[in-house]
Image 1 (spheres, rainbow, N blue to C red):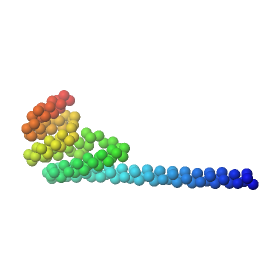
Image 2: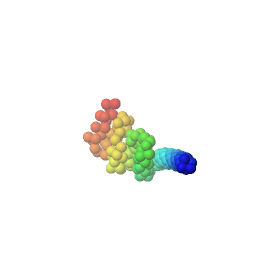
Image 3: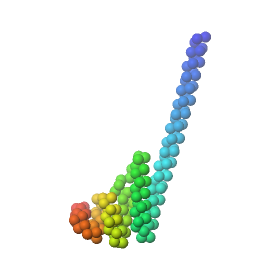
Image 4: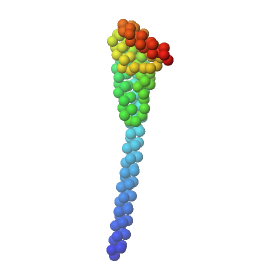
Length: 154
């Protein structure tokens, strides 16, 4: 009789362990799927923000483009926190940082233009040459020369 009770206890314990394992496994799958969905939604939001920047630039609305740029930068940071990779340099290119700076420079808003250029330093020769022109327009000749020199090294 003790042997039957022992067998029943063991099989009950195994059944409970099996059920708990299935519950844990299912929970991990559901959590993983939810995280993937959130990641995709965040990436879609990021790309939508990039499209908005392009529209604002096309319309000549530098201020809104810069605001959307900052929102896109925050979204990019969320994407990185989730374990996906977006370098700051590729973000600046994709989010049109230099174009936003040029938009401000065209409107003689050099403080804003320089702020954008300096918030996303680039090692890209084209961006460096364009930044040099912005610095020159702002009257920051040393920075203009430095950016131009860096560009010419490439």
